[in-house]
Length: 611
Image 1 (cartoon, rainbow, N blue to C red):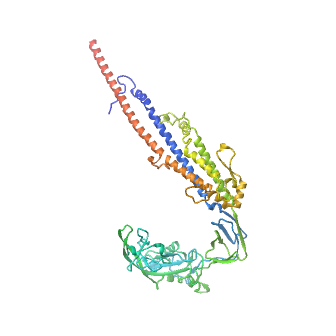
Image 2: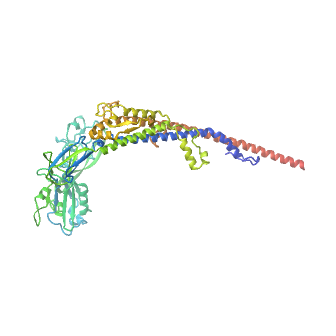
Image 3: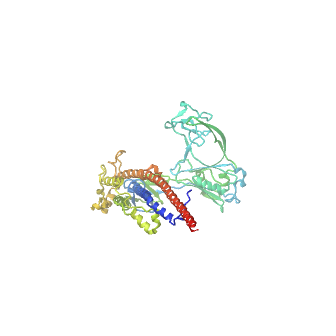
């Protein structure tokens, strides 16, 4: 370490002298710092621009790029209390008449008699009888389309069964084990995996056998009546309720409808299940083997005494039996109702649906009440909503091209280079802010990617779209302003656009989003589809130049590599400056020592001659 003697002998302010000398030497380093800072501003401005391009692309995708935008309908109904109509995916207007409508109803079941008065919601089932522990309750209920949910049928080894009776080897996750080329393995009579080409089955050539899916829950030691009801309500196709005051239960299917002749919409079982743990040796696609343990059902036996549904809930086995069973002490009152379909006459045709909400030709109809007299409905395009989306696109396009034009034409002010840290120390915060506002100008001036994007976007919008009803943007009332200085800004003839939407909304959509199917060219594509292709290309080019986000690694994009180069130059220059400053101090130290020695000799001679 060099000892620095700051002018003790010479009386000079060595620190100040060295500081001034170093200030001159630092000028080239400050220039590199300023270039690095300006490049960082440039990188950030590119990323900000990319964000703007992404946002505009998303606006197109969520707005005029979706057919759902252009099929929005206003529906008129002669009696809105009877039913509602909502368009889902119909691309054309619709109308019709509904009459003689009855509502779909859900199947219900209630207790045939009251439960034990001592039972409450918090009663533990094992306190009623210990045998309830381990009992499995099963519920099957109608689904939304009027059928029952299905699950793959399995054999006693847990292997999935095909319709022809063949078992295919199944893993512990309940999915078929696949070969390297995606084929099933057969399982032998003992449930073991058969390997070899002759034991492979192409999934395309077979069908898996299916069976009705049941909700199953095995009662635990800690279960209360309410905890079981909560489990039923959360995971099964029915809603259960216990009225403690009356000591009765009710079960209602969550979905309406009739499951069919002699098929009950709600079915209840309480069983004991016998399972067996087996070990499966799985030969995987890569040829390696793995042993897994699997619990598989061997059999199940209906509980005859202390049956949860029969003895606690006082329920029949299914909703059809309940509907035919009188309540105890209430003549002619059944202990349940069967599910029924909605029935109506639609445009003269009598139809049935399992739900009160159903679709016809892309329109969703929801029956609200039963009625007999004809009720008519008709739709027209929702011009206001569609117009608003098109206007949103035009406004955003105009804002984007104004932003781009402003950035590529903005001149750099060479009188305001980036401030160094030393310069900032002598300025107020507001002064720094005003300075940097001017210093940051021109970062994207004449950028070739952005200039090319502007040209491509204008070309995309001005070139006609063959094979569509409108063909050109001007046909729906959207044109460029007359002022050349506005750089191709769009303006809307509101009356003409509204007319086009009212008469042919799908045609407007096709003008924007038609697809000619040619992946190599966008010439035959709709205007917005072309724009999205242009935006995607520009975003990619800018990302290669400036990276996508702050997390981007510098060596993966052009400006990042330049910043790394500046950083290397700064590090090397700072080392040189440190070495130079050390040399300056060393030289002044030597000077101080020499002056000190001279002063000592002078004092000695002066003392010698004076004596």
